Amino acid sequence: MPKFELNPKALAAWNPHIKVAAEQSVNTITMFGVVGDSYDYWGETNKGITLARVDAALRSIGDNEVVVYINSPGGDMFEGIAIYNRLREHSQKVTIKVIGLAASAASIIAMAGAERLIAKSAFLMIHNCWSNFVGNRNDLRDIADQLEEFDISMRDVYIDVSGMSESEVTDLMDKESYLSGSSAVQKSLMTGVLQAEEIATDTAPASQAQAFQNINAALAEGGVPYNQRLKMLAAIKDNFWGQESEISLHPTTKQKSSNAAAELFMSFSDGLKSLAF
Image (tube, rainbow, N blue to C red):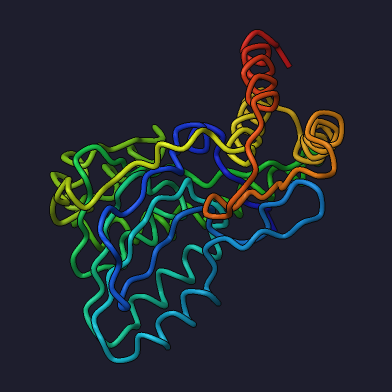
């Protein structure tokens, strides 16, 4: 079975500082972060967007309408499809509001609403399933066949929601398409445009968590295997941040900032751009 991994381009494009401007009602679910909770670098499981958390929120909301805000680079496809199905089962109206990025697995979740709104400045990213896998030629053929089945499942969701043709959706997925708010509405993947006043941007300096996410994206883009990236990022943590620093990959967790860490990230990421892996 393939191990789904964040698409490095989506991770690099994601701005975790985009948030909801107004105070949220009790019937609101925010999905800000990675889909699934296996996104860790040194043995720490970070709570992301999971079926268990969404199910608990819906049980608390009860037989009422719900609004779901999304800003996510994607993540685990199994988790995304499960969350999509759970939202579709909700007894009352589900309204989706994409305020930043809904990429990959998060774009599937975004299809769950009867009303699906997206900011003009936001993006919907749809693509074929992305995985980092090592094996012999038979293993790779087998994993490609499995990934194709997941692609078909995703494609069918987009077709059912939008009414687009199979060939049109397949073409968008093959091209790894970033659709602006207007384009997503034009293609009927989203039903309308979100009012700009609902969106705000956190002006706080970049956190250590975001620095690590960006470094990881650059390494993944360069083709560095997952396990090797874990070791490299752990070494950076130990050698430059030290044991006293608070490291968390969940964007809503408070973290200590470090000018030295920020400078390290800038020089490290600049260096990565010139590397050929």
